[in-house]
Amino acid sequence: MVIEDLFLPKKRSFIKIIDSRENLLFCSFTKTEINKEKGSMTTKETYFNPSERIGSLIDNGRLEITNILGIGAYGVVYSAKHVINQHVYAVKCMPKTNIDARQHRLHESEIRLHAQVSGHLNIINLEKVVETSDTLNVVLEYCHEGDLFSMITEKGGYLGNDQLIKQVFIQILDAVQFCHLNGIYHRDLKPENILVFDGGRTVKLADFGLATTDRWSRDFGCGSTFYMSPECQGGLHKRVKGYATASNDIWSLGVILINLTCGRNPWKQACLRDETFSVFLRDRDFLKTILPLSDELNEILKDIFTLDPEKRISLDKLRERILSCHKFTVSEYDDFIEEEITSTSHDRLSASSSATACSWYSMNSEIGFSTAPSEFLEDYDRCSTSNNSASSLSTLANSQPDLIKFIDHELEFNLKCDDHLLENQQIQTIYTF
Image (cartoon, rainbow, N blue to C red):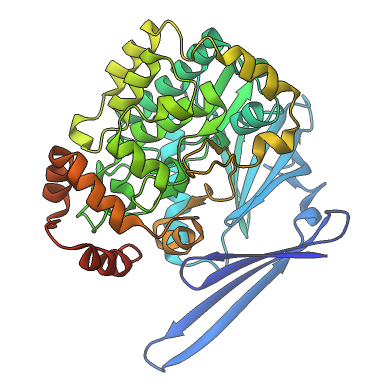
């Protein structure tokens, strides 16, 4: 029997208990409430077995719950079948009871924002919302082929196929641009939140649980660590006042572009404690030495991974550059593709390593899972990092003074101090948001 305990914000935990055959026995939602007036603390715990809903009817008997597709911290996703025409849907079932006001707001926001953009061809359609006495059921377009993450890592569906990569990435970009034009910023762009159709030729954006209408946000650490921009993490070294949500989405698109073209992540986290990212800051062409990027793609990525959000490439310009890109990878990549296809799925998912620790990172979602802002601190602690970030700063200051001037301006932080002070301040501030 396996017990998974997923800690949530607001002193609330979610527990899954799974038997040896990977059958879900039951879930437990635990919520701790503090009574400030009485100085007491009470705990409410709700147990339920998601499989009990299988076979039940919702939407006035029109939809029958048929199977469990997935379980997350804030609800269960089922498949459901229309009892008359047999059409299959996905139903995201979110509890209405024993959740705090913040969770109610998040649920309402997710539904409202998703509904606003669900008419786009490359965004999963939100069909309807069905309420019961204890649940909020969001009926969604069903995808039986899975997500982009699985298509890349398990099936190698895009390796070496420049035309297909271009076709798919443009669809993702168009979906994001449609959201932005409607004043909606996703904040959790990653392959797991993109569903595939037609054998991977068509993709649709999903999961608006962290989406916002705020053009400027102070919700640091919102999203998945692999895909967060430095400013979304609070800045490279010291907390910034906020970040532009549109520019943060564009940064995430850059990581997804590397996922599609190389089947890898460029780094674990875009922070100074990540050695690969630190080297990239010193040498903007560094990714070409560890990934089979063409010169054209390398230049595009440099314009995406620009530290100054105001100078980051726009979606319009990015679309134009992608369409005009002749080749995403070097011709020598053919040998690598053959090697990759013959490797096992486990090999593709395990992280590559090298003596310099500046290697290709696998697209392993263990570190890249979604976090709401208040969960980020715990997730950040899990990130595998090096201990020489202070020396990285010093080296960076010597090699690229212009870049450091920008960082200094952005963070209002004087880098003219010795390594010892830098190290102490790094320890003090890197986990304090």
